[in-house]
Amino acid sequence: MQNTLLQLFVLTVIIHLIDTLAYSVRLNSVKSGQVALSFSLFNIFVLVSRTANTFQAPLIGSIIGLSIAQGIDPILDMRKIILAATVGTLSGVILIPSFLRVFGAAVRRMEITGSVPSLVVEALHINNIKRMVKKAARPSKSMLQRLRYREIPKRLLLINAFVTGIYTIGVLSANYAALLVAEEYRLAAAASSGMVNGIATVLLTLFIDPKAAIITDQALRGKRPYEDVKALVVVLIGTKLIGTLLGQVLFLPAAQIIAAFYQ
Image (cartoon, rainbow, N blue to C red; front, side):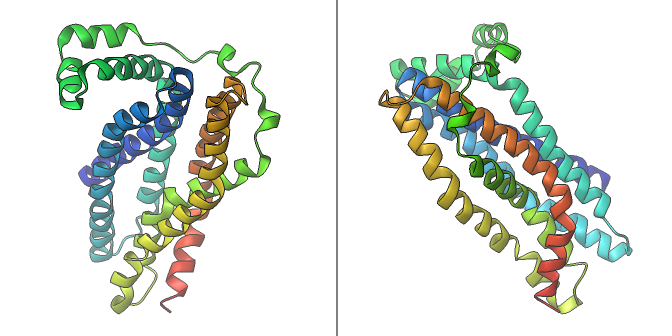
């Protein structure tokens, strides 16, 4: 079980690392004006994240199955996985300055090559890897100064933290709920993860994506300063980090609510 837990921890870190870096793509798209090209290139990273996500549920199910067979409570293991989401988010925060430098250069290069496979092959060349390492940069306080946080809707903070919390524990809570119900309902409870994540997706689509898109588009048209998009990204990443911590609080109540549907 410990080997499975380690694999799951690493996968969760990767998923939340890439999700965190995704927020920063807005900065590059506004600064360069290459919105479509930026998001097209970033789809490669999203593909890696989504592929890792497909392995997450079976691994969690494996831990729950072994726990049921051995008669043990895996709640500490579940909380370690939630911690991995926090670790992944923090790692993303640290890597954002370096990522933006490398990503900006990759977007410019892709405009020349016109091919994602060619770009990937070039990136794997030892000389280009050395250049990427040299582009590494640390986050600094100056990046957070003079940002117009007042222009960012306050409810966006609360909603994004809550949605991230739900997204973080959706699969975990549903699978853990299988321990809290009668044997004949265990598969149904575990399958409820899609419903939980579906609720998070709906909230994200209705309340967060539209406002974030409006601020980004206004900055592209020159109706807002670039600093507003920077403030938006900082707020979204900050509340995402809070959301992963909130997941520790929401995990058990969410599992109990799901179990209540089958009792």
